[in-house]
Image (cartoon, rainbow, N blue to C red; front, side, top):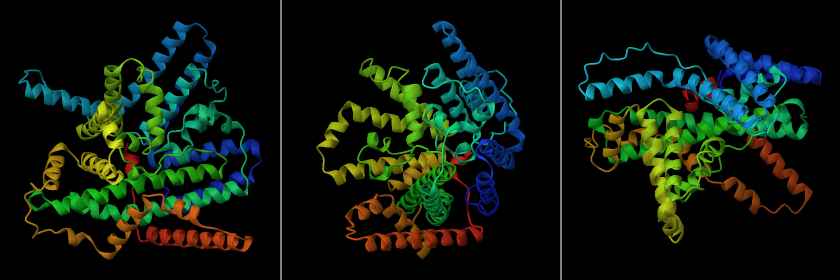
Length: 477
């Protein structure tokens, strides 16, 4: 039941909102939990019991960590809790990948050992996100940044709350623990939540989905027909798709949470205007970046133990970041490349970039991001290699069978153009430039904003009713 679906927009969400505000405050969390359980079961009823078992286990871990006082028992309990959560993630998400990789190594080594036969393991919906929320819970209690949750239903609500359950943002427990029991919603919250949701829905339906048709079409082109212009158009369209798809989902999640009184952290800050890869990761998927920084990079030593250790820590974090996105060597390579560029920038490239003309720095960063998106989008390393060859002019296509212009109809051009423009903070810049000298001008501005939002909502609903391509990219992680 994705946010951009008729069943969610016109049935699930209105019913949940109506009953939420109809109930007295003491019953509202229970209703949100029931709605969240229904939301998850709608798409993944098979694994609902597994998720609840995971939550109950972490509930017990939290109580134990709260009760223990001695350092060694607390460390052992934390190690057990983290191992249990990571073990669950590894089994369901990586067991088939690890078995297949080991079989490939045995084959390369001409080993006589029988291959490992492992039946395909289904991936529980949202396992990467609910596992990280569970890890945040036990680690925050261990660090005494939060108190263990005595109410099992409230812990369930933290992990299962439907706006962030499937694809984030990753909300750390200590950031939201107080809001679980005490929060309020006023007219300002409702207006801000609706506005944010409509903006996210528009990003998804009008920009990401249209760009996806171009990206999917080009990435499906046979290697014999790939040319440099076609390949660059394909990865450019995918860059627009993945940003507006995921930032659109994040906007919708933040907006939905605001409707119920929750304040979620921001997840994106115009990453495509970055002028270095270091800056890119200060703007892209912020909740994930902060999670890896606070729960992995800093515990490993961060940059406090010398340069060599810092580079090893960075490489480790980004290898795991790539692997977190998917059980594939493509994702591992994607993470490794990002980590490598961050290390190179720390080795001195960043100082050179700081003395370089700003547009050149921007081109450098955007080129690296586009090249690495090929690893992220391609189904395997063979397709990645073919695509990268085409991008540098070594493709096999002659430009006659399939041409880039074939994918550039008016709708695509409009979506890609809008994607380029709204990848920058132009709206915020225009707002700052406006001078509203009187209350009448302010009212006119607010009316214009309202009309724009209504048009965006109607246009998105019309696109939704046409039944076009609609899945969220990050739902599969």
